[in-house]
Length: 129
Image (cartoon, rainbow, N blue to C red):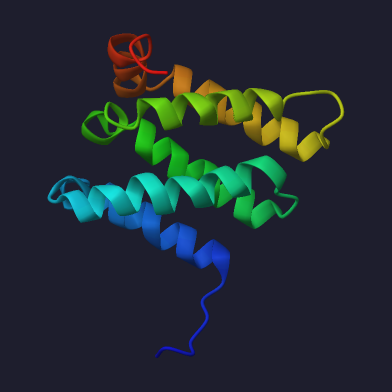
């Protein structure tokens, strides 16, 4: 099993599924939360900064949506989530490809339609960073 290499889109999808099914798992201990904050957020940062692969960008955005829609995770991750919001806004720039702009705008639209995400942004967005 040590030599099995999973495709990045599959790994992102599995992480998103784990987050959605049991967010308390990542809050249950400092090591699990550190994995989320340092490992998963670092991967998302890398993928959102310089991703030109549609499948990876879509799954990264989906994982980001899952983080925002879970207030218990979003509140302590607000500094990281604010960085991701800026990256998503950067993806709307004219020099980006049409599919990058469209996916970013779709993410921002879905965020504005998610009451839980809006509530956590309102309550915790001004206190971070």
